[in-house]
Image 1 (cartoon, rainbow, N blue to C red):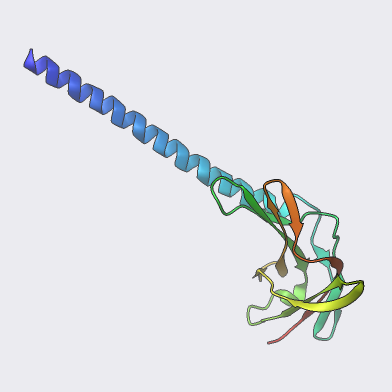
Image 2 (spheres, rainbow, N blue to C red):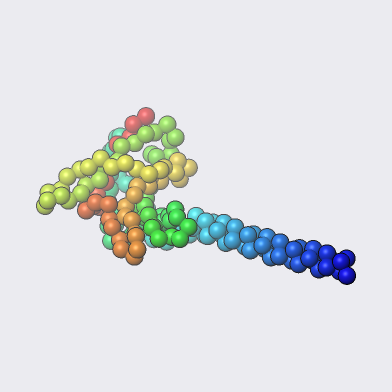
Length: 157
């Protein structure tokens, strides 16, 4: 009787441990698949990045302020906060030694002014600069500033 009890106990523990491992692996795979899908689709959700006009060391142009952004990320597991980034593409940004200055035209108190803005990251292989455009929290979009859509990138080596 005692041998039968031990066998049943070990069998039950084995099954419970297997189920635990299955759920742990499934959770990890789901998380990794969400990250992969975000990385693959995030750059193609909206139209192509803004294309520039180059004048010596200044790249200037316009981006569409009506669209959310070219790339979207959610850094928390529950995806309660989503960050949207705009992209500006230029072959001049394909230099890893660059530390460009980004200026965006914004409207403040009825006046249009150029404001130096911190960019988020640069894809040097494709020549694309990304900057934080808006944050979506609890279903409400909050644009970082009242952008007019005009930009300038000043290239510094």
